[in-house]
Image 1 (tube, rainbow, N blue to C red):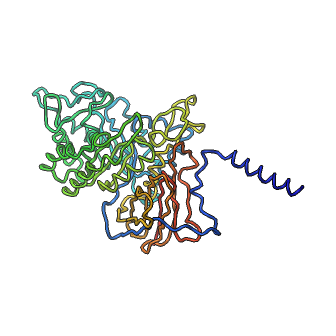
Image 2 (cartoon, rainbow, N blue to C red):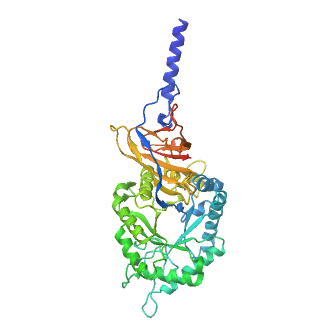
Image 3 (spheres, one colour):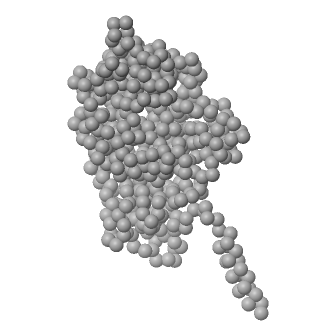
Length: 494
């Protein structure tokens, strides 16, 4: 009888364990088999070739514009800086140029707070923190509609000519003013989304002058020449044209006149991804495969001109789609920088992590997204899978995957990057399939597995499913399990 009671108790414990298991717990796919189990054979193998090299990375970053001032002075200020700059390792700050605005002093102090926090971690890594300033609108006195909001273009002078000289002078003074406040201006984009009429801060430019639009190429050349005349060898590197679209024809049309006159004036072709492929806000969607053609054409244009490619703003899509979109930019257009839209953005209480922008904050204790006052979203982790370990000056290299099991699906995506000294490789793997995949990362070039981080973006994912350490399957040197809808970053060394 005692034995029967023990058996019944054991069964009840097992049943209780099954009933109490939370649906939000990390999937069992991240738990490796016990050493006594015979590991199943790998379905994929990894064979990096560091001699086949592509673009050199400038870095990963985010924008700190609206709502960025909701962080300095708050109890969670340092925690957010740690998440963004220590853990995520962002290396590019994108700020909004507000020189001459009534709130300039306040906005500059906020920019400085973020820069100082980021620089501390960059210094520890032996890197320099980079700053990109973009203009949404020049001061109202330079606008055709006399206001910062509502689109408009540059104003015209009494002789009917657009005031390119005034615009160039404003930008030159802006660079000097920010630098005087201790904020480096490494890169400049003279106009955010010149191809879009905004209801908020904005200024439109065209390929050529019209009665209503100033010329983007003429404005760009005016600013560049003013920089060269007044700043000399301290002229910021220029990102252009930073359009809303990644349509390659539009980019060429805006850049070709600049190339004819000042071929060395452009550092990188900058663009966003809101047009040129399929994406939407509602529903939150990014069809990353639909961008293939335009990204291929940008790569060709950059190869022909010697420019780099920078994606400087985007947020649409689920977190898994975001991870795929980043990889698409890195591997198709050979982007040297990927900058997410909102490093910090406003938001009330959140029921899940599947929301846009990297960190969501609130300006009121009554409407906090979480008990601690902020929320790291799934997009934060999608970015971190690239930005933490792929550092500036890393080079993308060939890292092909070989399918061993021909009966499985093929939607496994990857990108590999080698450190400047060639001693380390970072591989990002995205399993877009509904089945778990087994990949053998063992290779002759980089035999030592240093770390592997994994996030599982299945529906309803939670924080405990994000960025977990994963270990090789026992009995193998470097076989990893890749759950469905997961992103895994693997670091290996010689």
